[in-house]
Length: 140
Image (cartoon, rainbow, N blue to C red; front, side):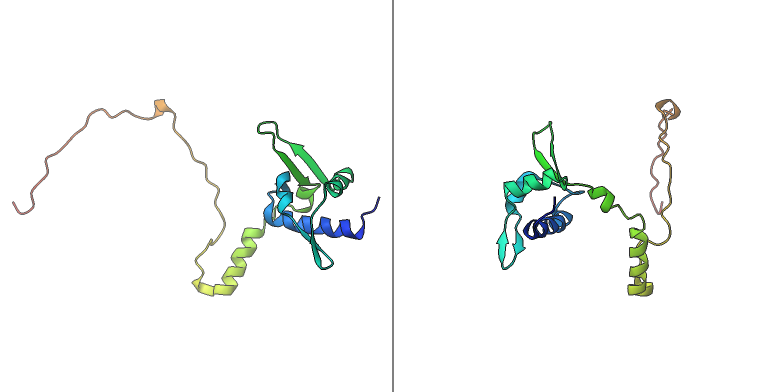
């Protein structure tokens, strides 16, 4: 099945809107009340019939979370087509270095991975005694 021109425009604008406002391609179903797309010279809304068509065509997935009963919509395949860019931080650092030159003091160099070792309670020595010394007066 093919999308009509009207449906295609709605879907593409829904993708853009989801990228801006959604989280990992997901958004609460009730947010669609605030979504409008432009078709011709008018602003339009996604109708329930159009949304059902997107779901039937597997373009949008519908989920219900049992803990609070909320209904969530997710763009199908979002994570496959919008992967996390592992080089993003490095590219930003290089760009800012070019832009600001030596004035840029942001994240320089590589990020070091460290292991934090938390001692077990038996490894922590209990204080044996508290030694206090009287304070000395200056000038005496």
